[in-house]
Length: 188
Image (cartoon, rainbow, N blue to C red; front, side):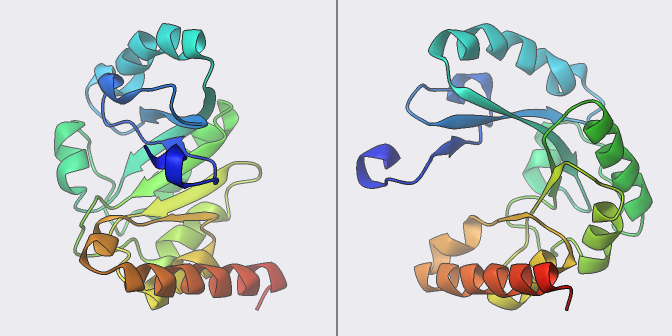
């Protein structure tokens, strides 16, 4: 449906194996690294892999890390959430993902989280990474937060729930990401 109205690449963020479709350009092929349930680390991926190969959709390997409160994603995924005051734990997971060949690592506070991942947490993780793309999401409710997360080292900022409340907030968030990204590149 989205492809009908949008020329931009569409990337699936499946919440389940049944959410996979060929009507997208790529799929985040995620492993919930800090789950205590093997199904979310490699089981779902094993079940999805033959279908993904058959439909030929591009895969984007992602280590998915639940941080802080974790919200529903943490509960459903049997995650052992990384405490917000332990960025070194997230950095170790992210570094392991990079060494294992993952292309992306996602620090997730949880959809609708009351608190976003702090910029110092993001920068603490980013400084250990050489090649992997850092994605940060959850609790990003305005452009100032998006700016601080982007400037701290996030290569991709994810938001979702907040735009249901007001599409205008999306423009503010996009502007914040751009400003933070420019300052990050310039080293400001």
